[in-house]
Length: 297
Image (cartoon, rainbow, N blue to C red; front, side, top):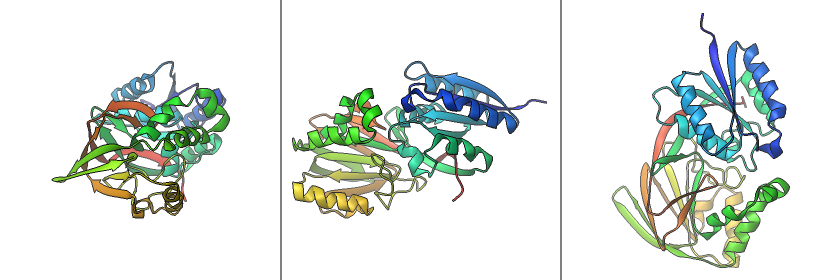
């Protein structure tokens, strides 16, 4: 009799390098459930994606991912368009953990491990951008590019506040650009400070900031934030807090299955927190594509 297969993919640099503390707990839990477990630790960029591809080829039933949004992105990119895709179990160890928050996955690692005991299986969308994938958000603009300046030391000390501080620095420069959005035979062109394309309702660690977005609704949601004054920024924060970003007078909102975005001058996309492609961008949605384990409400 062939035993069920499980794989644990670990980013040892996540969670202040404390991932090793949780490997044994996860492995023991999976073995108790009857799985034969393989543990894979990443050493360099794209290792998690490579391990995920291997899990598909071996028809592993469940993949437990220990890391932040970047590691989860790599794993989901690895399985995204495979014929066989394992169920994903996430143990959040990152700075922000947007994807885990959006799917109501416990943020405390020990509680996330316990999800295995009595899980809810959620089927979620993921986005495709050019030849790669995103699970949360694609940003365009100087504020988005500012996140590249955040060091590992800043993330360890300040968490998501580190990204906010760098964003504020760029906001004060009021850098704007022309963005062109093409969707469903429509073309929109306007001046912007920031463009957000999202598949979840969570930004910078804040959940439910866009009430019209659900991770399984089958759409890309685009928010173009125009040039804003200090007063506008205060009211926009209020809108974010209340889940009403698209209702702000300085926000243009579009919703579609596929979208093309270009800018003048050219901008480099921030994809799930990492540096990505320069514009132009071609984006689409893979509907109800990934099975992820979450907790019961």
